[in-house]
Every structure is written in structure tokens, then in C-alpha cells.
Image (cartoon, rainbow over all chains, first blue to last red; front, side, top):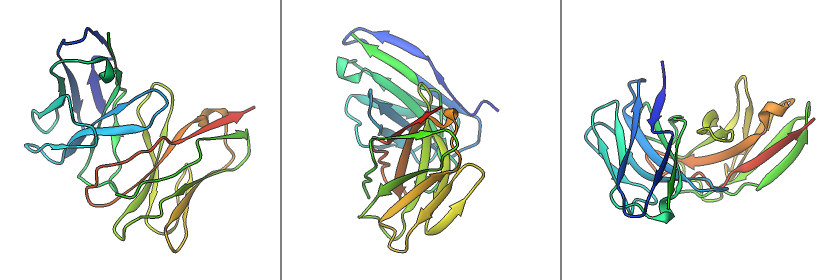
Length: 114
Length: 109
């Protein structure tokens, strides 16, 4: 059981480049989430997917798009990267929606935009 | 969504009990209180969750007073490996989760 996996672990982009962060979970969870964490800060929710086929905006969705490819996979896309998107990105999943349901986090992707 | 307030940092020594308090004055009736632990360069890890009174597991205890406007995470006999950031999260059915900045616990030998 790998839990939640994320690829890549590290990425450096130039301003204006695009990329997709991949996330997969093997726990048969219905809900998945993308967060960003800036240095010394807490996590901020970017997008979430309550169940397969649905996505919704979180606290900081601007500049990002998501795709819930299937029940296992939830990707985050940066169409035109900006330096303000330099951050650590965490994917998480939970059995169902609801903050009372524990979330399980991946190891993170460290993204630097020059 | 009930925002939370926690101390920015705390220091402790090995073997001591540590209590971290979180204020959530606007907690709603359906909201649960959840605590996560985050080590450097890792994603957060679920520690404990409660709705009211006291909850205990193998890692920690969570104390919630009757008015539920605050909660206290208690870590018994901390070790160096408990050095981490601890987040208090309050929310219900499907709020947009607010982790806040957390409490950085530094355990000294």
C-alpha cells in the first residue's frame, strides 16, 4: 500500500511554462485535494474533488486547473507558471468528503518558478 | 468556516507533557476538531479528532470544553521525534479546510 503518491518530487519552471502535477492514491478513497504550502505558512486548499467526476474550487484556485481522471488520480495543472506559484504542493485523499474525515497526504512536490 | 488561532511556537524538554491550545470561537454545531502533525519536508499526518469532551488514542489526547470554543492537544512525555508543526483544523460536512499556520513545537534534550 503506497498510500498517496505524487510526481514529480521537484520541478523548476521558467515563467510562462506549463506543467501538470500528478497524484494517485491506492486507498479507494472518494475525495481528493490539492494544497499549496508557502514557506513558514500553513496549507491552503487549491481545489478538491468530492467524488469521481466532480471538482470544486478551494481557497486559492486562480492560476490552476484540475482533472479527476478516475477514482485514483487527481492532477493539478499550471497553464502559465508565475513566480508567485513557487511553493510546495501536497495532494491528499480521504474516504469521503468532510473535514471530520481524516485526510492522508502525499510527500509533496517542490516547485520553483524562475 | 471556523478559523482557528494557535500559538506560533512552543518549547519543551524530553519527557514533559505538552499542551497546545487552539481557539475556535466561531465553531459551528456540526464542526469537528482535528489535529495534524507535520514534519519538515513531509505532508501532514492525522493525529486525533474529536467533537466534545475528551478523546484519547495511542499518540495523544484531545480535550474539548463544553462550549467547544477551544481545544487542547496533549502530548504525553514528548521526545525529540515529536518536534514538528501541529495544526488544528475545524470544520464540518464539507467546508473548505483552513489549516492556519500551526504551532511549531521544539523539543529539547
